Image (cartoon, rainbow over all chains, first blue to last red; front, top):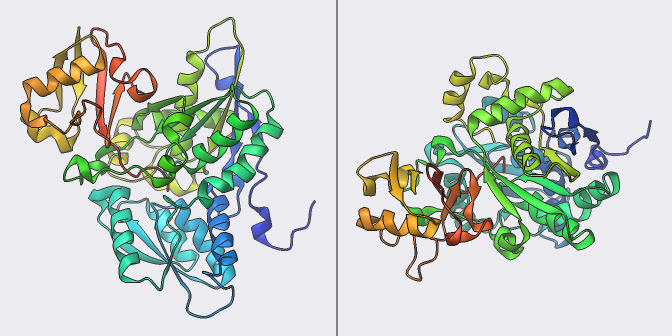
Length: 321
Length: 93
């Protein structure tokens, strides 16, 4: 076994596993990149470390110096990843967290020593972003990495996730990932298009459920600045929305290939299956999907154990994607 | 062609609280123009002054975002499911 000097060195280089037995078509292979293998448990380890390293390089953060505070809006995984890195680097992290995230996410943040600032659950991630931006203006002394607008978010994927995928799956024809901050899609998408222009980039829109009910009007909407700066509308080839029920069904089906994944991976897998269905019978294709995290943080949703319709109703009120 | 439109909460007051409405049209552009004609308080909330899709509105035909399948020219078939969703900060961010 390789010996590492820091847990931070374990970020990235995640394995890819062939899950084609779940493909609806024999001519389409599906491979999953297991980002839950990152040390803090999700794909967000990559961007958390990347954003902090960049802030340190810029002198905005100094490892070991006292009283350094970071602020970040997060519905879970970025906060957890940042909290782990901050713990190792000696920074104090404040996470603006909607009240309706799964309790495991809240507990993990506490475990890593982060401070939680509640934002209204009914306003979803949008409300968290809005509150964090207000707090950042009030406290310019806090370091606001702001994953939605930080170019080191897509850059982490351009430099690591993208090259890893192309090295492990050179025959890739389609990349399918979830659209949150858009960092994964922008970074991996740009890398793949530069090195293999024919690769199709598919975005899976999270099932928004009732969490968008807090919008007062359409102008409260939000498009991540990194989606705009990376020309997301041109980079993506397709964008499909996935329903909560499909997400949970596919999270369950992923156990058939031995994968206990988060519900977002179920949503993305559902999108990958829709993608596979569009491949003509006389063509072959290789789809790579992202498993953002494992299922542990979602056990309280009953996603694998309860009646699926009850789970779907519950899931509409909880941010789990 | 008659499509079934799913209306997001934020736009429901303009359609008298309905969660779905049926609107005729052969393209997404036609359907949305007809939607605004039937419910005039939606003026400016679906299409902007230039006739383009509102920046913070995503429109899906059978779950496919129309911006990537022909935009307002995307064809609509009888019984198609058209979902309107606000663009929000989402994901496990």
